[in-house]
Image (spheres, rainbow, N blue to C red):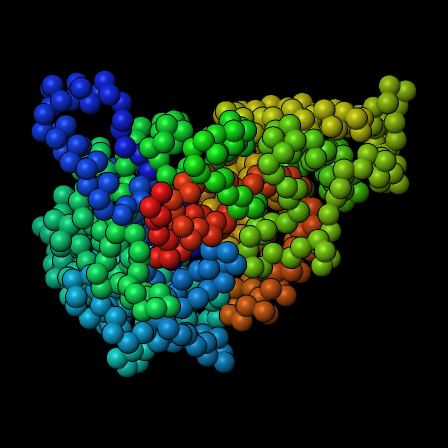
Length: 600
């Protein structure tokens, strides 16, 4: 788990309601005493506090899938490599260097000298080999961690072996670029966990699966990151203490991190976090566009700064169903509409007719930028418009010209009709309850009316929408988005591979589904799919950038997905926190080891 994963909301909170304290003091004196003692300590110990809306379910980094636990574990474990929160580039972590073989199938990491676990025991190559061979690749220890290491159609794991006391080698059956980042992640202490891994319970399961739960003595949980677990009080807070054996030091040789304690205060909701921040009890708060103006007015009085991290790692897009196939002799898409959707001129015209500037101003309160690429702007693999990425600026004149040149025309009522006289009208769907997408759909309906296109906008239940996209394939146009893929472009492979499970604009049948007759995969689709394979097989970043530049140019040239808007990422941070280098990619705390608290 790299520091690049600190790109989530970071908050802090102490419950300051006098009424609640009085009630607790009367009914629960021990709890009140504990809370009072916590606040007294807070004034004496340098500590940074954020909030979490859920309790951790485990402190085991392999078996944990909960976001709250991952936020905590991100501070407790370092990886072989780290990610620069500003650039997204890989940097040394517990490994001081790495080397890729000429055939790009092997990566050798060299660990730093003198590394130690939080209990003072040596941290070594043996721990790395143990984590991968005995835990992650262990079929008796199922986890999502294993899935990302399955390579090729056969899902083969890489081999991991000790080269010498400081070097560990990962060998892939074929070049696989994501392995560099994935294998550079965190690992666990062999001396503390080997017995649990090898011991089976009466059901034949490894005891490791129940190791390091929330009831474990914090002293037994051994870490490699900047912080170790000090205490956990369910429903109240998790306190992390500075790791005395952490490897990082500042330029003067002083130990890091500089902040003594890190506290996760457990709250009921995100709204409660914002309320506590505005009341002065929270140090860090993520700010959404709808609350930006409100919080901005309080910046000086509240002694905080709102940082703009640039475009967030998310996407919103409009897509047409380009599938030309049939099931049981019935076309998946009305053949008349399918001809429109598969017309490049039609898609380009629709892209030019969507008023993104108004969308940004009205829906995102001015706090967004146009999106033009399937790869996030924050990714080092992003290919920008100034280098040649095609874009589609709002231009109704250009949109109409494209349609007329493609054989469309207008009737007496100024409705757009095709060459056969069919009125251009289609249904646009999105998931009901998503206010941003519902607002986008409403505006797109209005924008396309200016083009003479009639849009029936229908927000529907998310599960129903997913069923249409993945099972029945009964849809015409959708507004959806992606998030969470990070900066590794291979995360988009299942979207752009012609047979990928998220290749929504021309979906192939899934396992057990009825076949599709006459499905057409275009040359550009196949080419993008092949480029993703090549990108995964290339471990040299500069060469990968060239490959993914071609992906982005092709995707924008044929626009099966019309990308819309990226919101900007904002966080409000109390001025007493020094050394903040905020970005949408890294968040507030990607360089947590460098942060310090002023005396103000």
